Length: 242
Image (cartoon, rainbow, N blue to C red):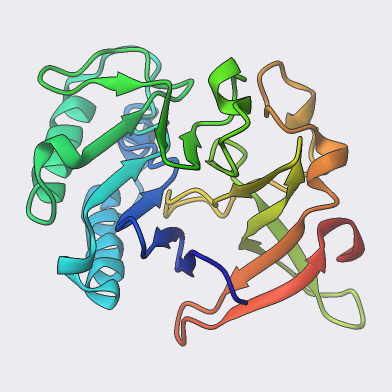
């Protein structure tokens, strides 16, 4: 797939600008489960850091100039002390690879609380690239100079089944297509505990589900990444996978 970007694991990298973007971390989800009395043998923060470090090492630390978090960095809508410390821990981890001013935080619908010394943005534009969460359409996103929009929020995933239709398994996916004369890239969630959302599930009926409608997204091409080899698989248009 010839392009000006590289799909790697659950992230997207733009070599010419040195921008690495990841979406929907939902840090604090594990803590929420524990408060509900659910003991989950998983360390969400450490797993997230481990996976991101592996991506950065594959790309090469010196090649990365900026890291963009595409929103829903936190899970709680309100303040949670444990979640807050996990976020600060994660930001300190990111600063091992890029300077603090080159960590770009896009505000997601879960990011209601400001974090001291860090500032959220509704979108980030660099040349003809625009990065946004994807739940709200800001006028600046549709500027004619913008050629590519990178967004998260939707948590795209697809079901693949065997020929007998007995075994079905869900996989995180990238969706890439055209919308309003721009290329739109929907990245999967970086959230390691849940695979994501099938576009046909009922979430799309919720207000603010996506700036790009369901019918348009279903015409986007679907890409899955082999985590072991890094190979990118083109599964064609989403509406043809069923």
